[in-house]
Length: 256
Image (cartoon, rainbow, N blue to C red; front, side, top):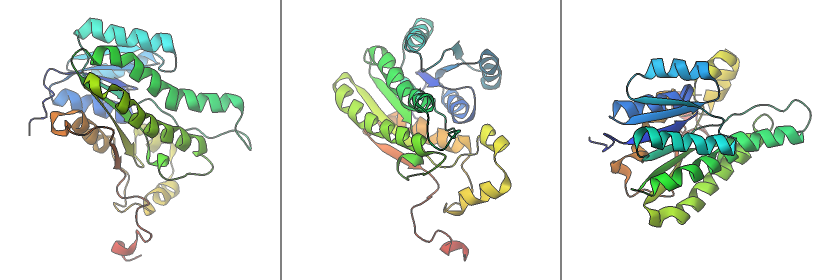
């Protein structure tokens, strides 16, 4: 199946590891040129080596408006056009006290929502030149309330879903499609390094697939949404969760 991505220029923010790195690699395999950004130069250097292909790497903090704008301009100057922009930056971190401090609230907002808005706004002037696609990486936490550790993470990812639908309505006439993906529990290298087996089993018990996703299994749907095969999809939010929290008795098929 030809996805129509040959020669396209794709931006993947936070493309140095995990889902972002897997997504960048998947686009390269479809013949696209890829730009990635990150805050740490050593991770950018490692990503370029791992990816090979036509890759442009740029050090930028996606929570800083000036750096986001500069990144978009640098990509355009390097490749001459931008066709797909994937807002992949995000992080979930536990509060240190009983409740969130103002600084912790600001940090969650900046990395999980502000980065999406600023990335999209920086991309639109270039995407509207020939039409294009914005894909926002949300989370299953946007649909399934997660009290405690991911309280603010889920709230911000829900905001990403709403923003996806809102922005789609604003830029449709410019030839820009805006979509979002909601990954479930994904075993990125960072997660693998920090989770113990008991927590891992707890995470996958409510999942019909009975295992976490690999980053590549999230990258595939992102590439599809950006492709010509999804050309009539707009303002859509696609869940890729292995069927987690969908049935009341997920263990039935396994005899639990």
